[in-house]
Amino acid sequence: MEWATTSPPPHENFDALPPIRSRRPLWDYANPDRPDPAVPVRGAIDTFRPNKNRAGVITFIISEAGFFGVLILAYLFYNATTASGPGSRELNLLKTSIFSVCLFASSFTIWRSEVGQHANKPGKMKLWLALTILLGGIFVVGQGMEYWDLYRTGVTVGLDLFATTFFTLTGFHGLHVCVGLIALLIVLGITFGRAFKNGHRPALAPVSLYWHFVDVVWVFVFSIVYLWPLLR
Image (cartoon, rainbow, N blue to C red; front, side, top):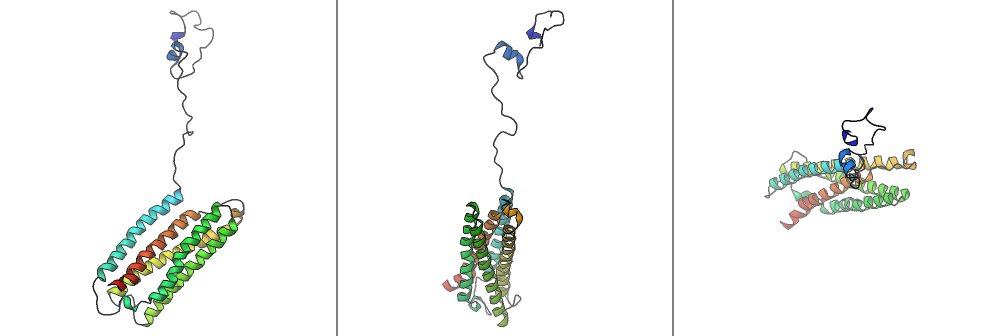
């Protein structure tokens, strides 16, 4: 503070403590018309923070996409040539198409459920969510019936390469559908709880993202396993 007094300083140095209003008081003392620029308060800067639930689901989906990619490639590799024994001709395309349409339609219903949530219409959200669960349940039941029909005709998972790759690919997809249904049931259960009535909203968006992924995977599986053999 020696710049604010004479040299040598007088007795007791200062009559009053000179104000220090910045980190460069000498500059401010010599240039009172040029103060420091305003410094934002820590935490006031707007920073982007991704949604943790959504980021986690996206990361999981990326890993699962690679997993299903390997299963599809394995199916294509082992079924590239026509082999003796049961094959895709044993599959019932009509029945599979019916419950596949139900799964594809569930992407629309879960989207409508999200719209209801964003519009703050819990009744519509619950209705469309329940329809999504119903359609997903129909798909799982349909796939189970298909497995039973194949089992009755002697087509089991260890019969040949076609049966092994078919049951592995479709079975893992069905397992993912079941996981999605459990998540949807949990979300639906939350909507009937006290927390939902008090304004708490369940994480429907990440579950919806996962459900759309399951639908997209089935588009590839259905096209490769059921439709592609018709073009060969």
